[in-house]
Length: 448
Image (cartoon, rainbow, N blue to C red; front, top):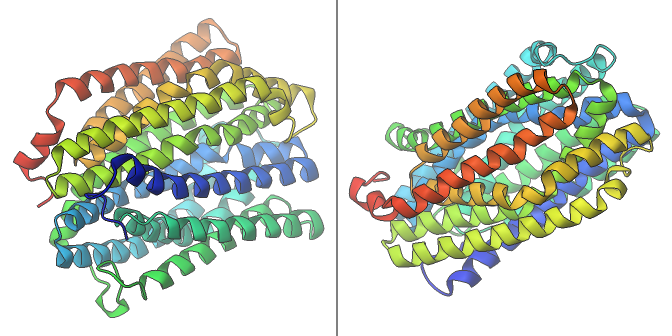
């Protein structure tokens, strides 16, 4: 538990962000190992089924993750204001709602996966593996939601170390089981998905157990797990815009994936491999966004406005610099990185082409996400929603729909990403400097 309203600003943010960074690094590493094992053992078609999973998984999971962001902001604000009874109520409400939504995700994912894959235009030679992978994956829906719920509670309280411990356990478990299930037992893509499910449930169980015995206001008592309607409404008020944003952006990405699918399974495998490595570019983004959201919510809850402003500037700078450094490395080393997943020259060519179109623009992606993290911490979740829906959904889809018909090459699709990252960054910067986002938070009393 860490009170971020006191002490050195940069130290607080870095010490919070570093475990998040390491945890996300582990998560990306075991996701990559997942694809490497599948690609090397089962071939390009199986790799295409697994590697193209990101957009569809985020479509199903992203909405729920967005909803729970509101819980984190509420918990952080109440903790910063020393409203410990309010923290207790918000924590138990979040856990109860997480159990419900985890079951919903499990049932929905299993039922609608084949329909969504067909709507995405998944090639027939990839369809059986894709259906098998996703149906097993979504059996672990409850584990995924409860892990994110529990770790979100830890992070809202300024504790980013325990989520790192559980990610380490999950990463090691997933990697070992991947090799056993796919390589030695011959369970195919279903084995890869099963490894992920087991790892998710294990990490969720460990995180939940810790919450039931932690010494602090966020301790969970099983007999008190229930929904407080007033608190849930406040959490949903903040989380619903982000959930909608995540889902609509995911739909846009599904449409993008559908256009990639039209170029065949080799393009799917190459681009899927790229997206796995691109996850590393999100490491500084997600770590500093998590730190900024918690830092801003706690400090505005404690009415430390100047401290919130200085912390926001520091987080943005660090996130942008780290993302761009990773982008430069990826641009240079793309052939070697993509070849980890497949020896097929065509697969490598597609992945390298996408990397060298997008990687140098990661600084803009980081800028947009850091700005969004700050505004969410301030309770202004509708602003990132509208900006990202306009730029990353409406404009991106319109661009692809129109321009791909005029220039029917896959690089036309790749250009959509840096183009829309640039537009969203420009809008966020204008809003950040023009709007009184800190004091509006206090006057409207959005979180009381």
